[in-house]
Each structure stands twice: as C-alpha cells, then as structure tokens.
Length: 41
Image (cartoon, rainbow, N blue to C red; front, side):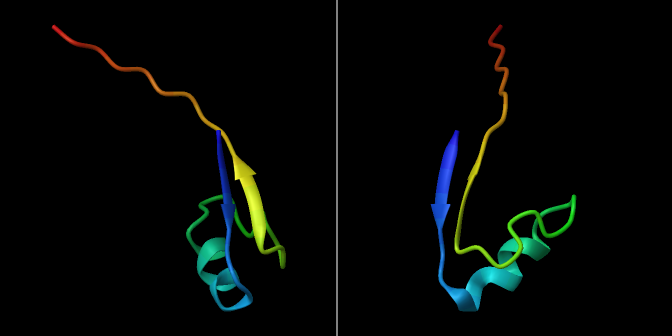
C-alpha cells in the first residue's frame, strides 16, 4: 500500500501516468495498493 501527496502543478502528470484514466481527478493525494510475488531459485 502506498500513500502519495503532490501539489496542484503535478496533478496532470499523476493522472496521465495512470493507465486506467484520471483516477485521482483534481485531488492532491491518493492511496494505491497492489500485490507482488517474488521467486528465488
């Protein structure tokens, strides 16, 4: 889980980097989560 905070000037960049569209709209903070698997052999 990751929490991010950015200023108004970065809002367009934050939304542009999301493949699913502008998920954060005009907000200047947001939380994202994911799942990671790692293998060693």
